[in-house]
Picture 1 (cartoon, rainbow, N blue to C red):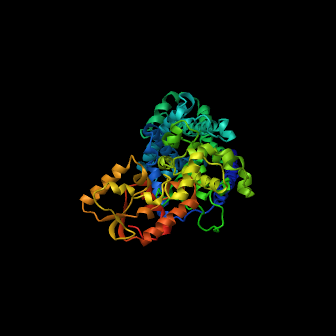
Picture 2 (cartoon, rainbow, N blue to C red):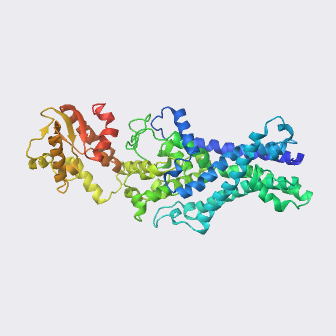
Picture 3 (cartoon, rainbow, N blue to C red):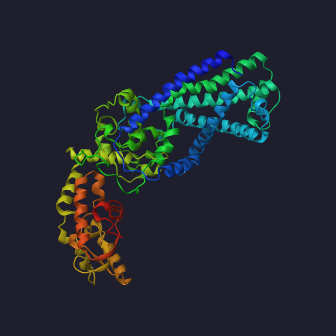
Amino acid sequence: MLTIPERILFILMFLGLGGLTTVLFFGIYRIIRAGKPAPPRENIVLSIGQALIDVLLQKPMFRSRPILSTFHAFIFFGFSFYFLVNVTDVMEGFIPGFELIYGGRGPLEPLPDLPINLFNLIADILSVLTLTGMIAFLVRRFIMKDKRLNFNDGVLLYEPVKKGWVRYDSLIVGTFILIHVGSRFLGQALRLAENGKPDPFMPFASLVSVPLRGLSESAFTAGIHITWWLAIGLILVFTPYFVRSKHIHLMVAPLNIGLGKQNPRGELDPAIPPGLPDDTEPGVKYLQDLSWPRLMDAYACIMCNRCNDVCPAHSQGLVLSPAALEVNKRWFINDHFVDMAFRNNFPDDPMLQWAISPEAVWSCTTCYACVRVCPVGNEPMADIVDIRRRMIIEGEELDSGIQTALESLAKNGNWFGKGSRARARWTKGLDFKVKDVSKEEAEYLWFVGDTASFDARVIPNTQAVARIFQQAGVDFGILGRAERNSGNDVRRVGEEGLFEQLAEDNAAALKKAKFKKIVTTDPHSLNALRNEYGPFVQDQLE
């Protein structure tokens, strides 16, 4: 179909623009590899395989926004199938007589018609669905102006993000998809119109072809060539921008999900990544302090703001936006791409100046909702905890309430500022004795927790649970004055040193205690004991 000059032009464009895109992809690889180590991943092949299955089924997308997720599925399935469509279109352009309409002719004559017809039917339907989904998204962003795509007032935005480049990027990507898919669809309609008859396996293209049948032969020839170039040539033009755009999530997201966190959700990564010297400064101050999965997050982000939907701080109008954090990271990398990718020169601009504000850092409740809802496996909460860790280490000014609570915890081992002897006073309201497992053996150790031990509003509930245990014949006891706060919330504040102190104190008390199994009614203590005490108790807990 293509003329000799057209073929030469396409080959030159493929070599030039394809080569440039390859170099840019290599740059992305270098930037991600420059991140700090992360806990090792196991069964990587199986994990990525499962991630691919989940992505193909669009399972992560349908965790929220079912209607919008359906439109996204239209685009995803269509664009994924278009990888094969684009290959056949290039073959049609370069191989004389190669044509797939009407079940295939020429070189494909020996092949059965059914696979080709099925291919044409799927391509025809998915073309329409892709165009429908893309139009719906553009209408939503630029006409309906969905407020969920906005950020709260006061959210720190990197300068290009503040100027609206996220919107422009969406427009560029959306326009590319409309032209790419629309031109290919129109080109097929022109071929059918030129032949003067419909193809039953291309119902939508056949419908569009009807009003086009009156065109002249020269118009058909020109139209088929123009639509081919708009469909295929445009891919080559777009690919260098693809590396900078949100559209790259199509390739990065499955990897991000497959290489994502494998340890329990409630377990934070260590303050000092594995493989680094013990004197490495914990936490994150600069972009290059992030681990490589957190750098990959920036490329996986689709800028959908679903994390904002579920963030309790953002929902209350505060200046925290998990989405803004990831978007800011991405545009910061784009602005410094050459230096970071090819000169290994990462700017020394603290993330607190361009990625997230100190106020936003302390607004995070570390509830994990943003991580749970993210369809591409991003973990903005992990960034925030690491930033807190460095702020604590460097003596950054803390909220007065947080500072007072940490001081009380360091001094007394609990949030309430009470002495250790007061921890078991709640047992005085019972008509039976509660064992102290540091002195006498019990089958179950009840790790009571601070709130249940000290809060007057909760103590009646604590006593009620003790009575239930006693009436059920459960042989239980408590640590009493030897118990300390589990450190779960302390670690999420970023005070890693205090967490380790509390965990070591509790581990020492557990080692001396006489019990077989441990139970707790405090969810924070449960998370710490189950997921974060491993290095301290070494499988001592059941």
